[in-house]
Length: 80
Length: 276
Image (cartoon, rainbow over all chains, first blue to last red; front, top):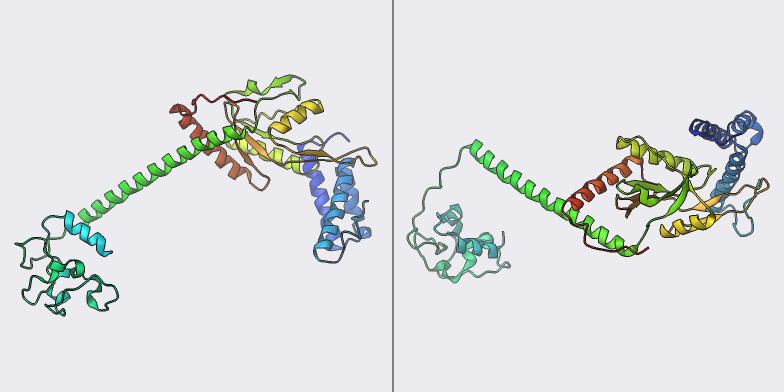
C-alpha cells in the first residue's frame, strides 16, 4: 500500500477508532471485533497497524499502572 | 474618600460654595469648643466629616456651626446649591469623558503591546534561536531559508510515515494559513542526517530514532512544535500541540500587525548583528 494521502489517512484513523471502540466495549475481547479488525487492517498501511497496536497495548498498560493494578518494574508492557 | 485628598481639593479649588456637607445637620452635634482631630478611631457621625481637617475648623462659630471650613472668608452664608445641568447635557459630558478615558486606555495598552513586542525581539535576539539553513525541498531542489525573506513562515519538524501526530499538526498548519486567506504553500524539506541535525540544533528541536522492529520500521520521537518566523528570518514565537488552529491564527495575526508597526517606525533596525 502506498503512503496514505489525506483521505486515506482519515479513513485509516476512523477504522482504527472504530476497532478500538469495539475493544473497549467488549473488554478487550479480540474475538468479538473480527470485522472491525479486518476493516482496520484494510484501511491502514502495515507500519501503522503495527504502530497503533503497540500504542493500544501501551495505553492499556499505562491505565493499569495508574490504577495500581500493575507494577511497571516487574511487568513491562507486552509487545505484540 | 481619604481625608488627605480632600485637603488637596480644598487647596486647589478657589472659592467654593458651601455644599450640603457643610450644612448645619452635619456639624450640629459637635461641641463648639472641641477641636476635632483627624482620628479614625473616634466613632460617630463626623468620622467622614471634612470638618476634621484642620485646627481652623472650629474657629467659626456661627449658627451652631462648628465646622465651616475656612475656604473663603466671605462665604459664610449657606447658599442654595447650583442649578443642575439638564440630564442630556450631563449624559453627554459623562459619555465624552468616558470615551476619552477609553481612548486613552486603549492607546496606552496598544503602546504597551508594541513596546513588549519590541522587547521580545531584543530578548529573542539574545537567545539566538533559529537562523538560516539549507535543505532539499520535496521537488529535489536545494533551497536556502534566505529565499523566503519577506515572507512569514510557519515551521514544523516531523518525520515521514509519522502515524498520528504529524498529520494532525500539518493539517493544522494548512488550516492556519487558509485562515489568512493564502493558498497553503506547504514545502517539505529533507537532507542528509548531518544537515537535519544542524537545523534541528538551531531550533533546539530534539529527535530520537526509535528501534527498528521486525519490519525494519522505526518511529522517530521528536519535539512537536510549530515555529513562527518573520520576514527577516527571525524566530518570533512557537506553538504547541494543545493550541487550536484558531488560537494560533490569532496569535500570528497579532505578531504580523505588531511587526508591521515596529518596522514602519524603524524600531527594528537597531543595528544588531545576528551571528549564527
